[in-house]
Length: 195
Image 1 (cartoon, rainbow, N blue to C red):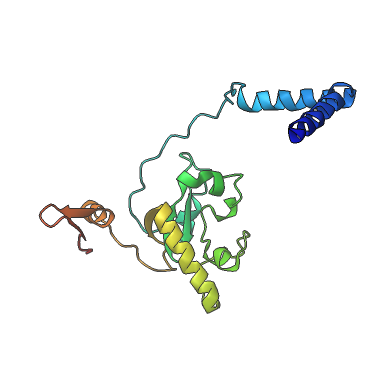
Image 2: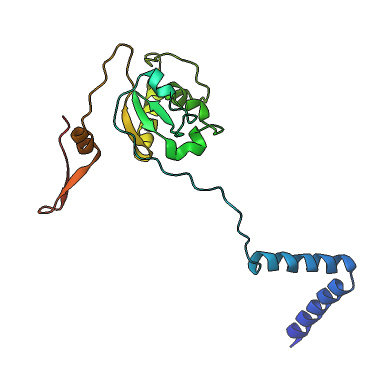
């Protein structure tokens, strides 16, 4: 019984301190208001920008550096491509990162391999970079980046070395490399042979 009376006297003391102190009353009102806003107020819809229309997948083709530079996000359709370790990827769906004004906009329409290997966002070379001076740790980093790009973005083709001829990708070959088939009998997945 003594504990109950002690608790009620402590609680009464706290209530008296809150009621008879103007500062405590203001703080209590502020706490109640914030709790109300947090739990009971309706969230206002923030107007968002209109969704960016999805572009169709690029047709598979190899590119020179000059052709790659056209895909910097400032072209008519706004497409963005980036080369990593000799492979060109359509990164348009990541335009907020690679497009104009994005944190990696310097990669747009360029070979970003050296930058990714050295953890830099400044592209220093305008010509073809053979990467022969990168050490093994840097090349491992490049391979990891290449895997991430393959998982996230559409593979377009190879980045051509100077005087290298592009591969002629036919429509059937393009479809066979981008798709795999499921054998209904064995329920296993098998890739079509690349030609």
